[in-house]
Amino acid sequence: MTSLVIRRPDDWHLHLRDETALRAVLPFTASRFARAIVMPNLKPPVTTTDLALAYRRRILAALPPGVSFEPLMTLYLTDETAPAEIERAKASGAVHGCKLYPAGATTHSDAGVTDVRHIDAALERMAELSMVLQVHGEVTDPQVDVFDREARFIDEVLAPLTERHRSLRVVFEHITTRAAVQFVSTAPAGIAATVTPQHLLMNRNALFAGGLRPHHYCLPVLKAEADRAALLSAVAGGSTRFFLGTDSAPHARSAKEAAYGCAGIFCAHAGIELYAEAFEAAGALDKLEAFASFHGADFYGLPRNAGTLTLKKEPWTVPENYPFGAAELVPLRAGESIAWRVTAAGTA
Ligand code: NCD
Ligand code: ZN
Image (cartoon, rainbow, N blue to C red; front, side):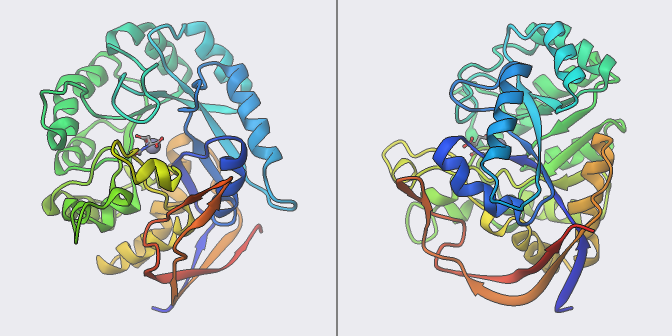
């Protein structure tokens, strides 16, 4: 197959940042995806409906002229998030979920939740209002091996949480392990997961290939080949439980290439093309459309998009970097080739 027309996709997990960084990265997403769940880990975090609505307005204002794109907002949960805030978020119509960052788990998560039991009242209200909980699934105990933190989170936090809140709809974000695939595949219907292109295409060897590779460092960190294979076969199997979420997470080159390099891989410049590569490698290009354009919308209870996106198998070389305000951004595959390109996007 050398050409592929799919329904316009959505990105169910995206970091857009703010101000000049927002203006630098937004066009990559808006030219491919009709909508995206925009992560709330700004500094300070997007903890209230008012902050989410203001951020939404800044995103819309940053769109290039004539481009239509719908930012879907999510609130950053803290130990203090009140059920009344969940009600305001739901009533706004613009907030589609709440994000659980265990405090200290990842970039800008220090204001996150210190113990999930502190947010039980908020979770209860979310379940009542059918508001989706998006979970960064890693334990933060520094004693736990970094490669085991997702599997431990399932046993110690996520499984008990879903038992306590049986009607809560949960997206286990950016899953990286065979354990997570198993958990989601056998969980009740209200539990789903997003999968990133980096975790479908690379294993942890990519962190050390030819030297230490900061641009391959994200959280949850890349895992073993058996984990990558489990993720790929899960998405290639076509289960409605799994859908697209790039977790494109831009950081300036200087913040990545540093003694304490930031976690986050920028992949929005090829946010659908990289998935096409992964699905093609799995012999499952026919499953790409539902993964990218149907499963997420159906899970969130939103209409599927009307337009289409055309991909062609036509290799292109990714630039060494892109402008990022006054700084520069090193994209995934910088200076290397990507097999698929987007040739047309249209609203119906
Ligand atoms: C994200 C970021 O930079 O905001 N980083 C990452 O490695 N994925 C945060 C996150 O999603 O964990
Ligand atoms: Zn993320």
